[in-house]
Length: 175
Image (tube, rainbow, N blue to C red):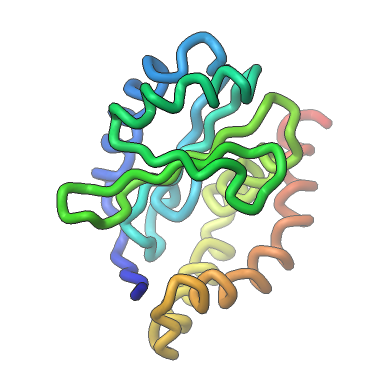
């Protein structure tokens, strides 16, 4: 499937807020926090027009039990989807195009810190965010149009930046 990258729009923040409210109702008391992650959370960079949501919960069993309520919201449960300890949901819009990804982890899971550190680091370091945007534009210019090729093209940048982002994130949080 081809990847579409579009310029940032503030509308994504509003869409996230609406979705977060619906997710709180669907997942109930197991929710500890909901975060807007991914490129749609970072002003100024190209992004797939898909809202990535990180839900931090107290119980994956409660999330599994809430799958029917997630389905009512239009989500398809994908299980761990390649990451142990995660629950992953996808939602499509009225055209059948993916519009939302929900990544659910239990409080304390390592992946939570990685997602938040990467997002917050790019928000606080516009030069790094611009480098990330440039890398994404280059991937598009090089015709890396499949989802798989696009994801693979981002890995070196993300994996190189993540340790620095995590160190910075921990310092910001007093750790």
